[in-house]
Image 1: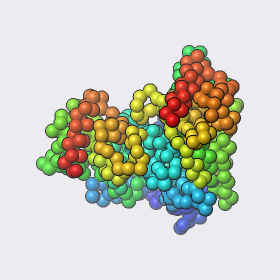
Image 2: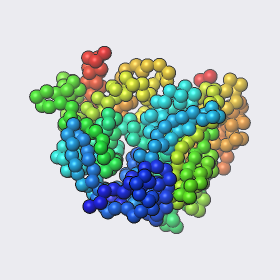
Image 3: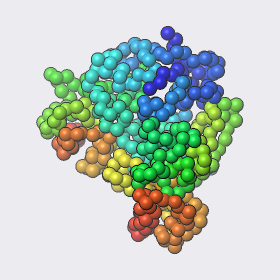
Image 4: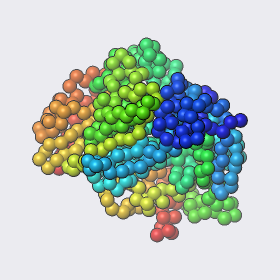
Length: 315
Length: 189
């Protein structure tokens, strides 16, 4: 790990201001950042501790939703009685991720900003356009192992997936991300606006400007329905998704579907939601239209459809 | 040596940061330690290399094996994936704070009673996690296998196994670890 200066921010404004400096990085739970710093994939020269910024509350909004502080831990959020009652999809997605120890430390904001677990991103001996823009993508080289990697929303520069389970549930729930800029302005993003697709610049993984800090995630008023999160993975616990399906289904058959494990961001399309009453095949025809799988991860297309079909058969 | 910069309340937020070391007070197993640490020092390295508390183990050093599990302010975490300087003033409980060789705590005794280890390397982390999960279940913290999110959580094999999935045991003592945890849970109930 490279040496760095360390400072604690007492409030979000101080944190955002300090983080404008070149080489500065926020740290909250640190469970992903420190791992990346040990690999020297992340090499901040200044680390701004934002755990003392008072952003760990979960509070009702005037619109009937919830405002989740960026520092609320994944464990606390999964256990919040309002989340369990009104947004069970979010609770289910959270507890399907990581381990108990990690969920106790990981934060809401940090979970959104965690980086891909693509093995070629982690292997600093291999070219990666995320680590070194223009270096190339080892994941698309001859003989690369791609069964875990993305099938849609990807590009010739990068086929990595976003690893979060929480974000998939948030996408299905139409959550928005609130931020604070160093100049004091605030912004609000849908998750699709927050996560740009890789295109030819996969090193740009969010819409955040230098120093801009996530302050909260806002859930709209509860939408009810039957909410399920099904995560398919190589072992029963403590593994990243091969495919995950977030489903909200109303009594009339309408609803929403978002996928994890297949794309550089939580994957949802309006046209696919509209096809939900016609069944899993109709949904996936729309949701995965334009997919560009490799030979080794084409199974994800069938797996996504069959997983949704299994969830729909439960009703 | 400078104190870590306190951005915001006391100083101009744009003030220059300090150097590569910071002072840090850790309260470990009830004892206060005033340290000055390289900012890079993980909580695990602070415990092992600076305080000679070698119970918490460095297995993978990447948060995958759980051998470094300790409790911070009553919550279990991976000590390898957090900076010691971020725990200034925190109360840390390691395996050395659970019991002594002369007076083991209930979970330590249960691991012996049930032959819940072979080489023992992962055992301090297993015991710290095992102790914590019983409290997490009592407190109603849901897990991936919790069937009903709105009722009290049943202490089933599946709940214990799922909650212990962040603690690997290469000797494969899982079946007996499960028995040990049940023994303590039943004694408490």
